[in-house]
Image (cartoon, rainbow, N blue to C red):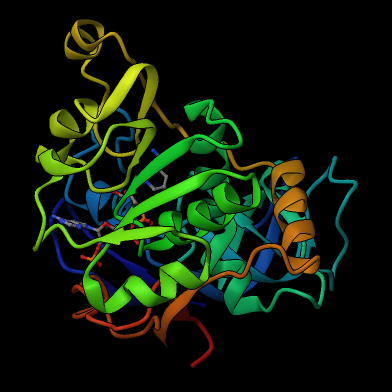
Length: 303
Ligand SMILES: NC(=O)c1ccc[n+]([C@@H]2O[C@H](COP(=O)([O-])OP(=O)(O)OC[C@H]3O[C@@H](n4cnc5c(N)ncnc54)[C@H](OP(=O)(O)O)[C@@H]3O)[C@@H](O)[C@H]2O)c1
């Protein structure tokens, strides 16, 4: 089968021909049709997470999977060959034609969610859901979502709106109308307005990180929660401001994916896809894709 691999930290992605893996106990082999862009993949490839995830080279990145079951390992009861499925593998390996995924991180894909949408949401739907849970936000309260036009943010806006929460989002102004349609009451372009000048809110979901973490803490009312996704909490500053810091470590489960699929099927959440492009262009795969649409960059494995 074809797979994209890197030979060392920071080395370029390239196409290799490799054997199709066999599922071990509890694993499902998925014939992969679509995967998608997650910042953790280039991050791991560059060695940023080598303390936590040491890589064995050659290494195949990729987490999101959408396709059909090709084989099941011993002990797998919920899936059979031919089932349409989607899910996420923390062990990576999804930039390939066949992928091993633990049955516990996989769900059936009904016709109400396309393969592209499934690959676009397996990880980030759970991140958005779990960040909202961590934020402890309640109906009628106000939530600020920083970096709302991406994979996590475009779903978090919808989930928060459905929960009766007032959403203030940040995004480039060209993406404001799309986010307002999904339920954001106000969209702020940080190129035109300073974070420091925004009103106080009950909680923040921060999908940008970097130097926005500290100023975003200052926007949270006393007793509120600031949730980060790519920067560890700054406990001292949070204690000083009398807010609660939280960090999401997304756990993708069959149950969580089924819950998300239900919302899509009921028309309550619409997965957002910014672009679909081939997986087999390793030189440019991780370049920033400039698109006027919100949501995820999806990679097609079969074309
Ligand atoms: N801890 C976990 O378990 C977990 C799980 C999933 C994701 N994450 C992390 O969560 C973050 C969000 O994920 P995602 O999939 O939603 O990423 P994404 O699709 O790349 O979205 C990131 C958003 O942030 C905006 N942004 C980035 N840098 C910015 C800056 N300097 N100023 C203003 N806006 C900026 C982007 O806007 P533009 O596109 O307009 O620049 C985009 O809307 C990523 O860092 C990802 O690695 C963590």
